[in-house]
Amino acid sequence: MRYYIVAGERSGDLHGSNLVKAIRKRDAQAIFQGFGGDLMEASGVKLSVHYREMAFMGFISLATSLFKIYKYIKFCKNDMLEFKPDAIILIDYGGFNLKIAQFAKAQGLKVLYYIPPKVWAWYQSRAWKLKACVDRMFVILPFEKAFFKKYDFEVDYVGNPVLDAIKEFQPAPDFVLKHNLDSSKKIVALLPGSRKIELNKIVPLMAAIADSNKDVQFVVAAVKTLPADLYKALNEKPNVKFVEEETYDLLTIAHAAIVTSGTATLETGIFKVPQVVVYKTNFIEYTIANYLVQVEFISLVNLIAGKEVIREMIQTQATPKLVDAELKKLLHDSDYVSAMKGEYENVYSILDTGSASENTAQLIIEYLESR
Image 1 (cartoon, rainbow, N blue to C red):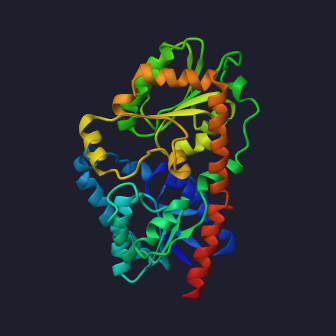
Image 2 (image 1 turned 120 degrees about the vertical axis):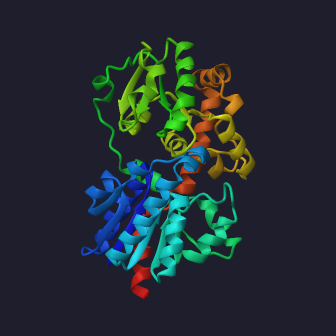
Image 3 (image 1 turned 135 degrees about the vertical axis):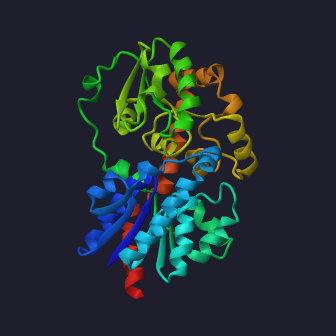
């Protein structure tokens, strides 16, 4: 089989690479081409475009990058037709991939969507568009199956690939020694995100927290592909260290974490690290998002649990004073932490349905062979 695969972000590259490897187990002759990153390329995908060229986030960023986005959409369409795939596999990256799905469907191609856009969070009418142009959809959050059923769209819940990645992870035994961490102090992981628009607001907040907790060892999970000056406010703090591409090792030894909303909240929860979620953006972005978002929580831990398990401090609540108070509870209130970890166990059991990559690969092969 020939697959054209499109992943436009760092997380999509990881999940796409695992899916490609799972498909190859069942179809050794499978050929892959498309958009992705280093991990997908290493798994055997011929990259037409690297995702780092398409790193857009936020309403303002998108509005000012429309010409570049449409240039890549046009390129993707032409590249896909030249490749002549048996099926299209789309991974997350909603705005872009919805356009590709509509085009591919009009060309008579089979459209498969793994990790669809979070239409349940905002602009829910996009569910009708997905139903119209996607032949088979594989969701990774248990409540998504019921959500799409409201639109008469039967989708497959395949488990969560984040859980797969963590199950396969083997911690480095020399991580603390390698980074010269002070193991006599409490270690707090700082996960400020992977996008510039996030770091510009979150890094100064984290720097203020570090200043008011000089007896704590803070460790920043930095992204090596981002400019170093984005972390400037944290750079010269004596109680702050940096690691790159070692987030899971950090979460293995952390006593608590301050996390920007996103997949990292779920990863932190699966590692059973007590956490507080923070999110800040500029006023215009926040106003637009606040108007559009249709869910009660922003963190995946709370969304999956269906209640507040971890505190979410958004915009005006994301202040040094409030975040610092929550961090002290995470470090010193054993009853509070124990209750949080108990809820983490419940979230884990909900997600633990086998390998999402393997389940999806099996369903893809069966679906295409039946056609």
